Image (cartoon, rainbow, N blue to C red; front, side):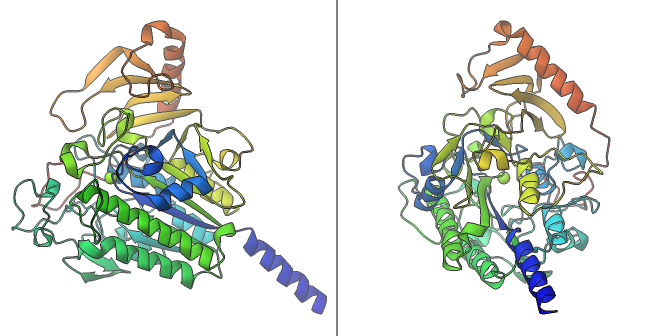
Length: 464
Ligand code: MG
């Protein structure tokens, strides 16, 4: 009997050891050029720089969409948002008065990991359904055991006191905004004190780690910033207010990694840091930088979607590696399931691929192609070093879409700023990319769009 119990104990412990913790830290509107380790000259990010030095930094990782809602849907479902109706050409994101949200039949990363015995927590911005309008859109109805955060972007609840153009102002006033802060399924503060939000998010995240240190956990830490309006509890960045915000975000990453080391969980926890889309350039000094990439948030040029990506898992992910392998945020879904020993759902199309071969340095990326959607339309496609633009349009301009026949073709290795069209030299590459798009399109089924239906009033025409 003793032997059987011992064998059972070993089996249970062995099982637990095979289920490492997973933490995804998701910044909002942080650009490719906004971190020290990605070349920013005056924003100080020692914690993220250290994370990159101790782990793997991606040069060619994409957010799956050019704006918030579809990007978050893709991260949490491992699917292009066109598959679940979480993207739209006109509305682009869920609005404050929206009634739609992530469909209940979607399998979120939280729900999938919960099934594997994980405790699941979310801190931060949701933006996958305004649960203040429809409670079933709440993160805790989508697989999360714990939640502390805002339902959507921090600019979606302006007060009558907010002047025109308040979002981009550097002299922010808390009285201009009334964002609701929720703990679990209860609104606990409105207006939320945004000045202390990043600090309180970090405190809640650290507490979640501490409370769950003895069992496998998944933490989705989706920052509210540096989305505008900007608020920070610290000052003094040479980059000004935007720098203060990013430096506090960097501080919070340090808090997470320190907590893991303190709890001796660092060798059993996979941490990934990235952003939901590129910098919001039309916000001027309140917006970030895409570095040498073209354009920003809202655009299918690389500045809108190629974002920082840092993986950290001491002992599993080799230290100090920079990879140019192609990857995207949907791949985090497949990677996290692989880490947890879970099977990828087979009853639906999953677009994410397991990044573990790249992350462990044991093989090449399984991702060959990436499709760039703006809203519900496929604008561009990348395979290897080449990217074809079938359609282009400025991020937020009122200009019409431009169709390109033949498509524009850029060699992103030779020309990361997408300046020199090489279509004439590579008809074979264009033909191959066109075929990839055709195959992809054949897998898309029409579904109900989630971004259209809304309550009357507070209609917003300005995409967030
Ligand atoms: Mg965003």
